[in-house]
Image 1 (cartoon, rainbow, N blue to C red):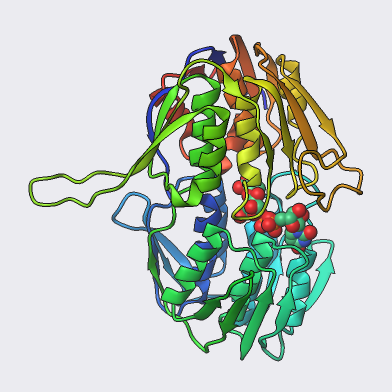
Image 2: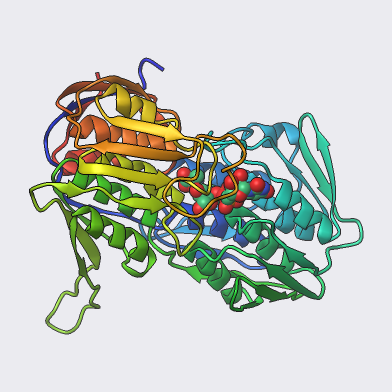
Length: 451
Ligand code: EPU
C-alpha cells in the first residue's frame, strides 16, 4: 500500500490534449459476448485497464483464445474450443470485478453449466445481484449459491421469457440480452436499461446474428436464434472518462481537449457543465480525403475565468445524469459560488468520498432526505444520499486514501486543484478504469510523481 502512492503538487491548471478509447463499461461486455459466437470476434480500441485483463483471464480459462490484433488496442477472440474451467482457477479472479456475473448466460449456452466467483467491483453500496439471478431462473436456469461462488446449470436448455426489472439495472439488462439471444423463443424485457453502452452491446449482438427490437418505454424484445457468429466492432468511447477529464479541467481552472469524446452520449453532462459555467467546444470527426489528412473528433473543455455557478442535479439512469459523473463534478462544484445540491438516486452509498473533500477544506453536508428533486428509492431507507455543497472553498493539500474508482479519480482532481502537496494512496485502483492516467496527467502538465 505504501508504494501505491502518488505525490500531487496541486494548484496548476491542467492544459493539453488526451484521448479516450472504448468505454470500459461496454468493452468488458463485448468481450463476454464473443463467447457466444461460433467464429472469431474482433474488438478495436480496447483500453489497457485492469477490468479488461480480468475478463481476458476468465475467457482464457474457458478456452477462448485471446490475442492482440495488428492495431493498437485490437483484441481477437477465438471461441472454437470453449471448455469448463475448475472452480479453483476461476476463483483466482474472485473479488476483482463485477463482469464475471455476465458469463452466466453465455456459459450456460455453450457448456450447460457455469461457475461464477465472488464478485468484486467498487464498494459503493451493497450491489446485490438478485435481478440477475431472478432473470436467469426465469430462463430456466437453476442457481445454487455456495460459499465458494455460484453454480448454475440448465439441464433442459434456456427458454425465452417475459420479465420486468424492478429497476432499470444496466448489468441485469445485459444479463438478459446475453442470455436471451440464444434462448429458445421470444424474450420480452420490460423496464430495461437503455444506456448507450447497452445499445452498443445490442449492436454487437445484432452483428453476430441476433434479432433484438428496442421498443419505446424501456421494452426490449429478443427473438432467440440457435447460433451466432463472431463480430467486428469499434466500441463507443468512454463517456465517463471523458467527463472525468472535463471536470478536472474545470476544477483546476484549466483547458483540456478530450479526443474521442462523443457529444451525443454526453448531452446531459454537457448541459450541466455549461450551467456550472464551464465552456466546451465540440469538434466533429472528418474522414481523410484526397489532400486532407482528416480530423479526429473530440470535445474541448475549459474554465473561462471568473466564478462558477452552483447547480442542483440528480443522478439517474440514461438519459439522466450518470452516477459515475457525479464524483468528479462535485470537486468542481466546491469551487462554485452558492449552494449546489446533488441527489444520488442510483447507488445508496456513493457520497462517502465527500469526507475526504471536507478534510481538504470543502464544505459538503450529506443528508438522508431526497433533496432538490423527486423522491427516490433511498428516501425512506436511511441512506445519506443527498449532498449540499457550499462554495467556493479554497482546497488545501491532504493525505488521501482512494476508496473506489470514481471517488478515487475525484480525490485526484481535488489534489490537483488544491494548494500544496498531497499524497494520494491506493492510486493503483484508478488503473481499473482509466487507461494510462499517469501518462495523461503528465501530458496535461500536472506535477505528480511516485515517491
Ligand atoms: N441492483 C439491484 N439488484 C441487481 C442489480 C442492480 O438492486 O441485481 C441495483 C444496484 O444496487 C444499484 C442499481 O440497481 O442501486 C443500478 O445498478 P446497475 O445494475 O445498473 O449497475 P451495474 O450494472 O452493476 C454498471 C456500471 C457502473 C455504473 C452503473 C450505472 C459496469 C461494469 N458497471 O454497474 O459503473 O455506475 O452501471 O450506470 O458496467 C464504474 O464504471 O465505476 C461503475 C461503477
